[in-house]
Image (cartoon, rainbow, N blue to C red):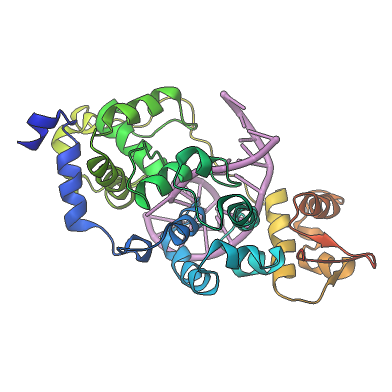
Length: 301
DNA sequence: TACACGTGGAA
DNA sequence: TTTCCAAGTGT
């Protein structure tokens, strides 16, 4: 009935109904949660599972309930409080963003999509997500969950491409309902469906509200074809070494000597003898580590 | 466009 | 055990 009068895509109504009945009770979704905690959740959730984010998010919103509170902190304390969420540059960027919000937006998170996008660490996805989830605006919110649902239900592919394509963005835009309130419910609904049912490894198609509309199911659930999905090398990478160095620096407020950092990332985990110093220099360059005149290192003050 | 960037749990 | 994967961004 409603879809006849509004011209929504056939996926929209069943996905919204499914979300209303099956959504997880996540704290950043509670009514009245301000945009700032919503932004914190979105940045923490970039490439990091919900269960690992939950306790850290609670700690952050209690400790730094406003952008001004975070901006007043040293970057090192913010990086330390990021804990083991991974990609600590996200913490640094969030701290930078808080400073910009104080300096240029009077301490209030902007409601304008373009102004959100201009903040450090906020890209296409996060700007759209905050504008949609915190402010109820109409934007295409395209994360990997959404891309997977689109790939399967609409395009008939088992997985999305490695990189977001113009065609995928156009599809997301085409599916977006006209009414902002509906668009926002659709956005969160597809994302949740991708996270809980239309999962990467073993989709639960029997629980899917749109299985009867799914192009991939109609085609017999064919295996992925196209370029290989990009994996993530880990052992011996700079990422691993950087992580070890950062873990050691997070663990103490006392600056660490080069010898102590050598213990944190010993030679037997290195790919080559100079990897440790190269990684340390990279961390300094990135602003994640501060070198002291006495040749010791600490999280930045 | 493709790659670098952390971390740890599930299969 | 190894591999896969998780609400991306910046260069």
